[in-house]
Length: 188
Length: 428
Image (cartoon, rainbow over all chains, first blue to last red; front, side, top):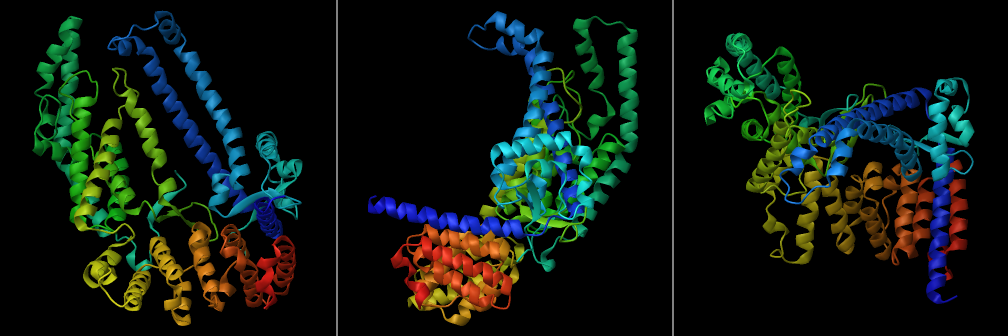
């Protein structure tokens, strides 16, 4: 191994040691208060609702553009593909609905899941100083773990109050994905 | 963002917004509504009668618009508000104070209350009022000429373009700082939380407005809300605020009006320039300037960054007392957001054989230690001091046995991971 490679390997080891220390610290942080979790879930729901409403409005605007496409293109100097334009105008409603539903599902599952993987929590959880970590290692969740957690949250949502009755403050989707939510800000 | 209500910039209590500018403006628009109510009622009756006449006369479709325009050009509301075919500067400004319905008034009252309250914390009331009027007028003007509408005699009214102009103003002055928001459920800080303005403040509203505005270019409108006026008002507010800030010569690293006034009257750029000799005196003045400004506003991260840079590049000129005084301002939130800046100071301290203030190490949370250690490990010079830094932290936390155990394990693992020549510090 060259000196440069050795140096890089050394740097990686140091970074690994520090990351592990951080993960163990997160694992040892206290479990998030169920009321705070409920509050952050409510805020996430409202954020998702607002974004969903935004998607609906965007969909309506998109629909308006689609049905007025012949008018817009009549100002264009290039000749439009009339078959494509007719298809778009005739199916404007369906296209808009599919796009809106697809966007909402994508956001709910994939965007939130990606945020949990990348930053360690949903927007509201991060705002109030909570983090979603792996129960054993304290690491942030892998992407498939995070996506599965989001999906199981949607499915097992009625079982969420379980956190109030368990000592470890975990709910059904935490147990299914071997994760937990920790309070990390304000902890020394 | 229903649950998140912007309260004020994250500033000391003495700099928090006052109520009187917003109350004054709210009273003004409400009085304006009361004064224009008879005109609004007369206008509603007139428009209804025009509709009745057009329907009764069974006018041909091709002539409807012409006849409607002829009749609508005489509507009462045009005496106090502008329309595309009939406007002037005076009515364009009046239009900011006229509201069509009580609902319209109520919604804009909330916006004016929030907008003026927040903006007058960093600019004088007259400047905020000017931006409101100019930005609002630009928004109404753009809306009059860009919106597709049935008749050219439809009046454009409302304060919302001006409110969006105030939003834009807040963005220009506070983009790099934090805003305190109110959550409607209890949290650690009793329902308040501070967020980076650039991440959250009105972005969602503005993006939504951009999307909705595009639909206004087509004859079939989505709703009766004037989205073009909102967007143009916002952009006008941005532009006007930039111009004002440039005219004031407001440096980008100052947040509150108090800091700006102190800077303008007591700290001149010349005292921080190259003219001051020797170097030690210049650095002393610079250091003192940052400390004085931080005493006015201890939440200003831009000042803390400059203080960090002054310390890290000239650490040998500063005594232990001065370093300790500076570290008082480097709290956990600053360290989390600007870890690199603090990392360079720590590295400079060790390189010049100076100590990190004990009190700061005692207050420093464990996650801050790890973040700073990661920064040191990436820096070729900082890596030499990584173990010493963790060791100093461990000494400062000696009164906490559990944490000390954790740190001992961490030190042992770092000793194994680091190359031999980087371990020299721990043996001292």
